[in-house]
Image (tube, rainbow, N blue to C red; front, top):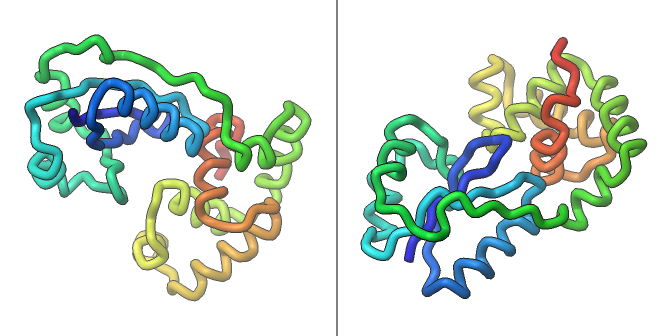
Amino acid sequence: MIYFMQAENSKRIKVGRVKGESSLMSRFRGLQTGSPEILTCLKTSEVLDETKTKNMFSHLRLHGEWFRARKDFLRFIKKLPSTKYDGMKSYSAFSPLNSRLLGSEARIRATTARIRTLTLREYQVLKHVANYKRNSQISAALHITEQTVKNHLRAAYAKIGISGRKEAHHLLVHLGGAVPKYY
């Protein structure tokens, strides 16, 4: 059985394969513990081939099994026969990583305040990291060198109190609208 799960905030879609219903439920919980986002099961299919499906939409691949949610991909998924898993949501608690980063409302306010101390360029680089861009892609998009990207990331991580790309992604995805719009 292959599944299509969508992250609520970032809208990206995970395509994966499991052996059956119990494996699907286990996988669903496992995905949620690594993500601060609510995950929704769009569809499952017993007949589709996972590899062929991924190859068909390889131009939308972000990394691993995660894909951009473009109209053609969403139409393809919507045309699949309905199953009892369609629309199932996961509201599991945040992972320990996110609890450490955010936790209480006071922590969220403090983290948001630290993000506001970033320079415009540091914040721009961090946003690209949150969208799973590699340093080479960020440098091309912002017209700066890869070394400058690394320098901005190092400074941003130090100011916010995080240690890497995964934490930056989880932090920015979770904060969403709490991040100042003037950047």
